[in-house]
Amino acid sequence: MMRSGFTTGSCAAAAAKAACLMIFEKSRIESISIMTPAGVSYHAETEDARFDQNGARASCAVRKDSGDDPDVTDGMLIYAEVSLEDDGKRCVIIEGGEGIGTVTRPGLDRSVGEAAINSVPRRMIEDEVRAITEEYEYGGTVRVVISAPEGRRIAQKTFNQRFGIEGGISIIGTTGVVEPMSTKAVLDTIALELRQHRSVGEKEIFVSPGNYGLTFMKEHFGYDLDKAVKCSNYIGKTIDIASSLGFERMLLIGHAGKLVKLSGGIMNTHSSEGDCRMELMAAAAARSGAAPDVINRILSCISTDEAYGCMKEAGIEKKSFSYIMERIMYYLNKRSPDMKIDCIVFSNRYGVLGSTVDIKEGIS
Image (cartoon, rainbow, N blue to C red):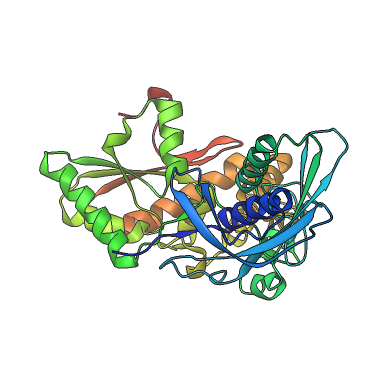
């Protein structure tokens, strides 16, 4: 069984809690526990703990443990420095320090100019710090500075710069937990789920790369998610398995950030396998008559939502996505000529961008 790890967000929250506690206890805290959003307790050892017995400042670090998940941030130290300002405002201010990236382009979790500490980690940090201040009945401002001394170097091994994060890593995580799975384990799980559906006589299967697609179907069409299979990035392999099991039809639905890649024949949508979303959207725009400046703007976008916005401003979004869907279906049908495949591509911001089924009639 593969070992789970914890996100940079969990590390930052644990370090902040420990540093805050050191101020009030006026002693070093060697270990600390927090509860992650996933409901899993994280017990962390602290390192390089420092505090001022005569002041209101402390800092410490927690070492990132990614478990068995391959992650460039594994083993790096995430620091939190906490200081108190006795001003009666009862607020928590969270800032980025050395090695934490700064957002330089729109479309990300944080606004341009802010430290790349995402919303969930910020809530985790604030919740843990507030729990300490309430326990010790402190009513002033708590300032938390998160840093990662190796962050600038490690960030060079990531896609941060391309996505619009400069100068360091991001503090991320939505559950607080890293759940690693090997490629074989993921594919074995997908195959098992598909076999279970087929064994009870189902001939049609609904597939989505992840939770975004499942949630979209539930919210917009009331779809029974027990009938769905999550395929992660392995769209091509999932098609192969479903076809070999004798399914007659597959409905694939996913966010444009994943499925646009299919229009270029990329059947494993992990960024390590290739990320040509903007190039493919720019090509579709060019084919739809976009002016050179529109094409150049799309090529400089960092998200499919941003690129779609450029298409929409130029009035070519429908024509462009009609072509994208045509190319997606070409490659899906080429992958499995014996199984009928339909596809819905959506955006959280713009809704359905392209579909090969009549969604007005609902999805059955």
